[in-house]
Image (cartoon, rainbow over all chains, first blue to last red; front, side):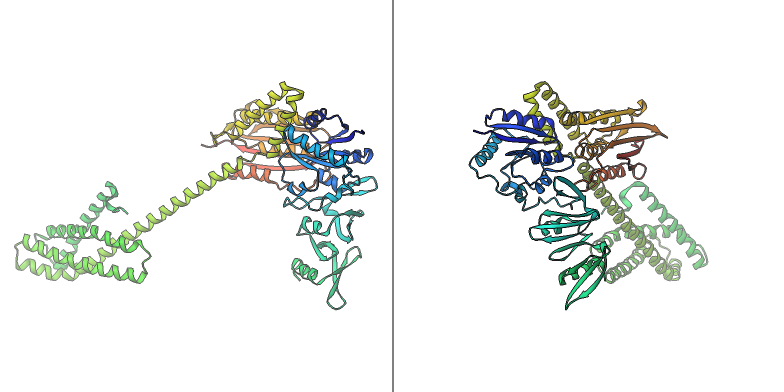
Length: 250
Length: 351
């Protein structure tokens, strides 16, 4: 039988050592790589296409959750994390399992067995891992960067460079100062996670940075158009107009 | 409320001295009114002052009673006037009876009495006013000082709670990740695991010690921070290095316990956690103008972080400095060329 190809991603070497040690007992698992940060982890997953990934959340450069957001591969994921402000319950159903550090061996083996069974039975993720993320963990604080993928390159867009966000079916197009980027995510996520004082959802399909707006013109019967500094014209719905009015005090 | 006059001996003395002065004053006044000095006028004045003093002492009780609740001003005023009328009449009556039985002078005393009566009434009203004013002043002052004491007590309670809260913020991430490292080391390097358990215990003991707000020496604080950094070094290996340059005379300087902890936690959180390269945390301490200057700096990865920090750590330290030193201490930060620096200036502790 083919071995299950596994990658361990954690920024702490003792944590990786522990997982590796536990895995030595399982003959049908083969650790093919270890990574100490998110960027490297993502690159390695893309290159090696593993079956299973042990993934820490809090890591330099890219968190485990951001990695999943832009993953095009479909490995099974087991989260390993210490106490976290991340509401892990949101992932409970999506990831194979999550392990709270420090975890007992019994728990570890149980989680791993679940993953192995899933992979062996062919019931593995049919969709890319990003589909796991229907809900974003709620930490209260607005996000400061958005991770996007362009081909094989991973980019971090600072939130203060985002001009506006446009809905496109299952995707959103992020227009920022250095171009635009497509990402599989919902408008709701952006509405909830971009800083409220800077962005307004002017339309079902548009969230715009308030200071990008140059002027607002009436359009049709009770709609408006927002003309941006860049010249882009975005439709403004009635409720969007009301929110803008509140935000800008006009 | 206790009677204000009997609260201490000084007040009693003052009280009686004042009445003696008033008695003398009355004699002099009546001498001018009556035109000549009668033999018993001095005795009579003292008798009348002793009587008045007794009455004045006893009106405290009804006065205090009317003033204690939420009585309307008009009612208070009526009460004061009624009590006043009773006091003055009672005083005149008593003095007349007492001196009348003591002094057997007959006509000359009767003349004296009749001539001075209007002045007596005036004097009685005037004295009544003074007594009420004194009592009123006393009650207001007592209420004020009680209120102040209450406010001060409340404030110190709030401060104490706040200080306790501010210092008990150890990052749970740190704790659980350290425990995980220990779990791992028990397999790969039991010796090191044991070492780390000891370090973690020592660190926790210091952090949780309820000897509490006793200031500690910089030496103590630095020893504990080294424990903390040693533990983080086990987690992150060569990724974390530290440098120190501490002038010897700083080591005995007293500072609040765990004051610096959040600053090192920040250095680790924003430096080590977010970086893939080596992070160097540099500590410098020196004394200038009888104040301690501590500078903590670390390099960091400048790429955007997932979320902007909430500034809790820095706020925490600056709030504690404020609570301990008022505006005499200061904290400032700078970000330059990929290096974050925080600088503290701490004055000598006052007891």
